[in-house]
Length: 400
Length: 211
Image (cartoon, rainbow over all chains, first blue to last red; front, side, top):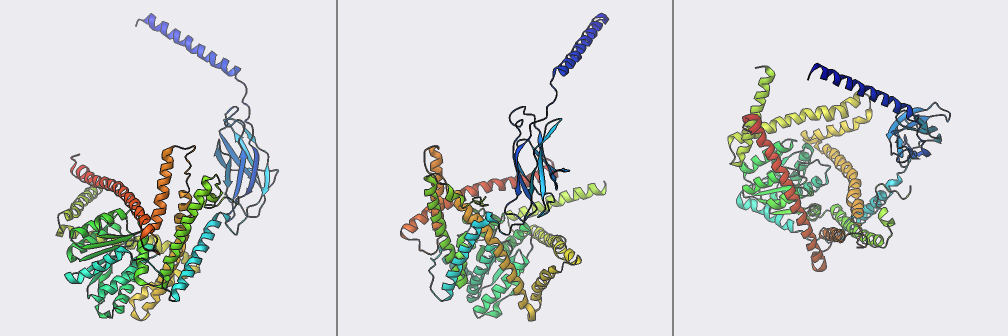
């Protein structure tokens, strides 16, 4: 490009830039001045229901410029004061489109508060009318959990009723569970083969229902094993479960009249890490070659590793767990599996303890009640009445 | 080579060697696997001992007691009761601690179970079966859901023998259970394969560098 050409281009660019500046100024001069957004209206403040105090719930109608109008609302600012005349301090900000929130920022119980919702756009703001006074209170009763309370009372009443019947010596029918026949056969195989039996009570804590059921089953297994003069190996993941397991196995041997056959070193703690525990139990399975492997309790990702290793040693394997994600692996790799509630039923069936039998009966009646509720709910729902379904909401909203 | 580089490289090769030791179990039990197994168990037991002290005993017992929150003496006493098992004469005291743990644990869990297994179960099963206003496949899906829930519940009913009508409904329940277990099995196997891929990637990429 020649010098003259470059100069011409430079002049053209300068003219263009000058035109743009002028244009911009003209636009600025013709734009209307910024108008404040319309305020939020119908502000309602009330104590947050069913809580332990320290909270106020606010709701309002959106500004006319939020969603509609100028559509320039960016946020709402919640302001609070102990006097209707202020001064108001900002508590929190919520985004446009929000029409309710709760204030939980150092709200004192039984103190009057006044609130304002300030609608904000890019450069201006409009406060709403002041709402209040409102006081936060502690509620003694959470009405949102009323359905849970009623169900708990019903369940407890059923349990107590059936437990009392069982304690009076009434014979409560519980159907035979197929897995229990397999359990007896499996434990009986160990002495015939001159090998020990292995019992893994899961890898959860003693407060887990599955572990409690497992300990009950262990009691029956220990008695059977003692009858057959067989060794029972019980590796433990949790030290407290180990303590309980030692107690239960010792009692099983005593009940069988062979306390001298009990070996405390066979009921031992391994580690509380999942996969090191599995590595150790796998090692026991391939070295001790138990004739029977019982995996009963709560299991996680290690279930298939345990069951596959046990299957490779040729042991008879019975599993039982209520861990839904692990059941498929046990079903695939074990000879028999106690599925979910069968685990609890098995412990009741084996021990015949009134407490467990009564609990099992109570649970069965609760299942009947559940099926009944489903059928009533379906009928009412399909004739257009949804009120029955709302009785099972968590939290319950029909009182609000 | 700096100390950091050396420790990083050493740790990497240790990880690779121990991974291969554990994998060797796929062939059969051997001294390499036993070495890795014992190391794994020992290290993890030691780790959990230290972890439990710093994350459970200290913040939940020692620190509150230092702040003179004397109500924490109760768990301390129960904890000491657990240790009485070491002394046969007073070993029976440990049963009190065990009873407290089992009782409180069950009491807390029962509310959660009733909410999730009862109230939520009912609510989720109450689905519209009326074909007006919704596609036919939604209605079919809802019917399958209903039959599956009711027949599954009947399968887990222990107060009646599985004979006659009860037996036939329970059989349907078993079919539903097995179908869901099959789906769950396939889903989890996929996740396990990704774990294997992760281990192989560690060996072949970080250690050997061939991929």
